[in-house]
Length: 129
Image (tube, rainbow, N blue to C red):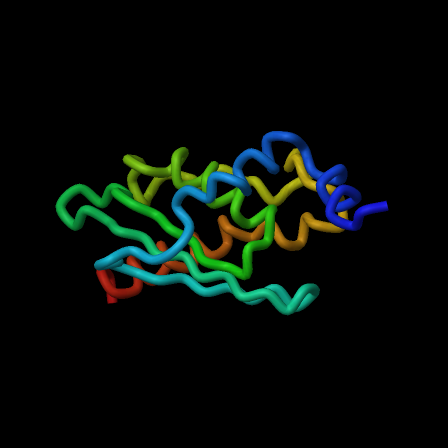
């Protein structure tokens, strides 16, 4: 049996769709802040970049870069669409919890929100010293 077919079957169709489109993955030209999170269980490193409108405190753009982990790419797309336009003071939705559409073995990989929160924390550290 084909290994790739076995892997694909473990993910929700929406996750596969997001993985194949890969929106909001990569680098911003001029990010305000960067957050980096390591995942010891899989030796992955996740880097999120945010752009914040300094006048309003609203998130205007978000990108994430990882080693193409399916769950990370899915969360990046979901969170970047959900958070864009919100204030950095708004509470971030939690996606790395029990309701995430990932196989249980991959929940540790869905740490996009941790990486984005790290970038937001960097924003607050530089704004409020």
